[in-house]
Length: 330
Image (tube, rainbow, N blue to C red; front, side):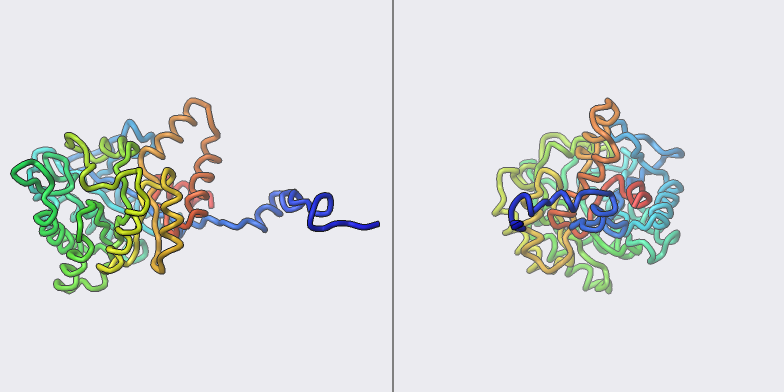
């Protein structure tokens, strides 16, 4: 009797799928709580958390509930928390000055979380002006109403310093200004913050999936960000941005959004020797939650499947609003 092992019936890949234990043993991709980063919003001037209607289960935190969320994330084994500040509407202006006020909501939140968890949880902060400007753009505007790249870099340098002074471990410049990583790195180094890392939003597309996030941060944006965020049609452009950010001193790089751009994420991960993050953004979260609420998909399986896909594509770290929940399950 002869058996051909390289083809059926000798070769039967289903043998490695027979039981949960077998599938677990041969799994090529594994999620771990330390892969996860929790994005969190803190809003100035509220006494109770404010639900975000487009993101069921996610809230704009008070200072007190943010501290609690940070502790819960730490206890679940989550690696880091990315903080976004939402100022009172009256404090927004054309230059986003609340973003560089040492007593602005984001800097206060950084200090709060640092006092609560110290260095046990990696504290990250969004370094961008869009939450703080009355026009909602990620930078200051010139006389014609366009975002002024170089003037914005000066503001980013100030933001980097005040966030570092507040005790942040990692700054995340997300505005997609040319030269932002180098300017921020220089500002940190020149002010004695050489140990603060830069997580570069290297690949950030102008995406329709940001919609719920704009509610989350109370965005004042009119128009769009297509002149500085990347065109979804382009991939080679991402590799150029990657090369520039690495040359300017990025410690880590990010692809955002995640699921619509897994091909780009895989290219980035195959290219670099620094950690790679992917941001599973608000619209990705909202789609799963909405479909699950309608009984169209299995919520828990869909969450794990999307995160596994992002990890399989090459992400070392995943920013996800499910971070604490998933870490507990893992």
